[in-house]
Length: 307
Image 1: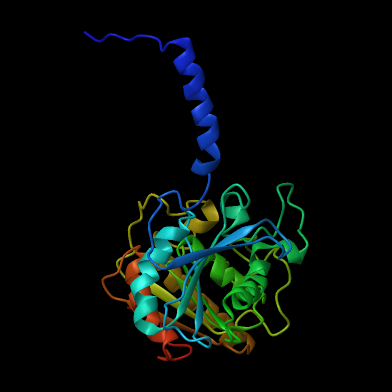
Image 2: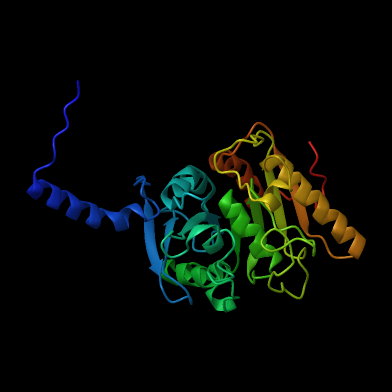
């Protein structure tokens, strides 16, 4: 037999007050509270949109001209976890790793983050300066000023929802000072076709850069074990499902289609593809492979993405 008693009214009042106080924290990214030794935070509020907190790590011996790597977090908006998973890599390779936190309350849902906040809730095109994609360049400047860094370009890495952010960023021609992008294990893609609606195709998408959608250097990284068709966070919109049954298949389909279109239309194709054996939907596993590219290994442009 179970017994249920009502809370005393005074206790209920204070419990409700505590919930109200904690709600803003619950909606805030980084709730896991992972302690990343040596990490710092910097909030940037003057880029043109909502405030963004940079979670970053610069080793004590990391030089001012060290490579700067932006790491775009996933759907959990857990910047602290992503920084923790890159910490040892950063310290071992003398790079500055920075994870911008696109908090859910400022950049809600896929539209606010994965799809760059390009359109508002009413479906109207936002000014380009307010796109989430447009934050990267001023965030780069803010970090350089704050840490007295001298690197003139940055790397852009994204996993999962972050990979969705990265490849659309590249295709819309937003990058100005990017060395190259790495898009890893995205759940859906913006295919370079005009008969599929944004954000899964070009129909209705804002115009990209004049150089063409394939001009900016990008490496597509695919874990060949990221092949679960029932993964809990796999995008399931009809247009996403049409891209393939799981992330690995969707990535191969996207890369192969893009390469064929570039060749058929005579566009410069500065993308390449790397398959990471044995890695599933795992940012840490992909990061260990991505650092070799950041440190100088160059995949063959146009390389086949087949297993």
